[in-house]
Amino acid sequence: MRFILVLLLLLCSAPMAQAQDAGDALSRELPPGLIVPEAAKPGPAFDVDKATAAYVGLLSEAQREKSDAYFEGGYWLTLWGFLYGLLVCAVFIGTGLSQKLRDISKRVSHRPWLYVAIYGALWLVAGEILSLPWALYTGYFREHAYGLSNLSMGAWFGEAGKGLMVSLIIMPWVVSGLFAAVRRAGDTWWLRAGIASFGLLLLLIMVSPVFISPLFNDYKPLPEGPVKSAIFSLARANQIPTDNVVYFDASKQTTRVSANVSGFAGTTQVSLNDNLLDKTSLPEIKAVMGHEMGHYVLNHGVRNLAYISLVLMFGFWFVHKLIDRVIARVGVRYGIKERTDPAVLPIAVAVFSFYMLLATPVLNTIIRTAEKEADLYGLNSAREPHGFATAAMRLSTYRKIEPGYWEEVIFYDHPSGYDRVHSSMLWLKENQALAEATP
Image 1 (cartoon, rainbow, N blue to C red):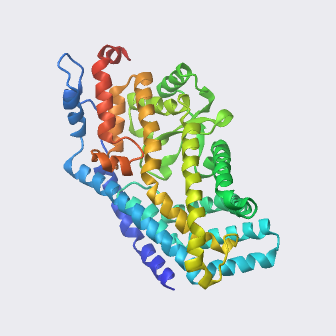
Image 2 (tube, helix red, strand yellow):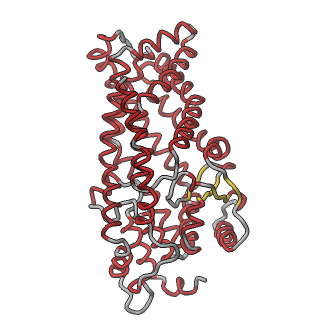
């Protein structure tokens, strides 16, 4: 009943959140087109720091306050999201829900691989329902409050439903495989799980552009014109398959500009969203696509996957070392006596979540390092320092532009806006002739 009341309160506040969207989006965004401050123009007296400061100064005080508030609020969301997750795990164990789902699953089948998969599906649905208030706040109301979402309430639920269906196809078998490793491998289950996570993530990367991403967005070849010519020329120069450069209709979901590299081997795809096409200039698009192509050429997908799989492996080891102690202190009183019981999953998730909270700086640094490398690659390949600096400033309307050193290390999975603009201006200082020769 309490859950239903919270949900009704959230639904009733939807019109107010949506009414703020248009004004917030307009006040937050920079004007369309390439922006080149006077202090950032090439010349004999060009100064990197002054040029960077001129770009940073493009944000008004109100825009910067809004950007800082949104991004710094995300720091707290990391903590509150972890605590909310612990609460959900406590509900599963303390109310006996996890044990009931296990018993239901065993009544359907006594085969471990099957009843664990059934439990995994039931656990996933129940967890989705219990997590709904938090998901609505973080994914819908907060995004609308800052003018970053274009989704209606119905569309948001539709996308959440699609995500749940994809999870129901994959996750029950992942849970079944994980418990199979626990049963058969004993004290080395965490090692097998870590190795398997690399294979699973690699498979998901390969199938995502073909089977998963099209469920949420419509992907199309780039239309003929200057943008397509410039991007395909850049792709050919960097030996990237030009038939896999597409755009998608992200504007139905978000006001953000973005691009990405997805897939692996034959499914590799470079994608840019329609906001990037509609809101930015050709130099910005070339700069962003040069960055994304850097990920492809530098093989960041597989490299990051290997690093992240190692982090996950240590997470499984962390669970292995603590799970029996937690079962002895908490699980036994609720009828959970061993790690092979699928009802222990919420406890394992709670322990793993604690590890992942501690590992946040490590994961962020892995990704941020690759992003920095792609930044530099993009500057050298696209030769659009003003395009990259302008694009960085657009992203800085919802990313804090100048964090402290440790703030960036702990919370940033991309270089800060200041870092990106400074890198662009440093490249420009050392390559003024090249930049001026670029059409």
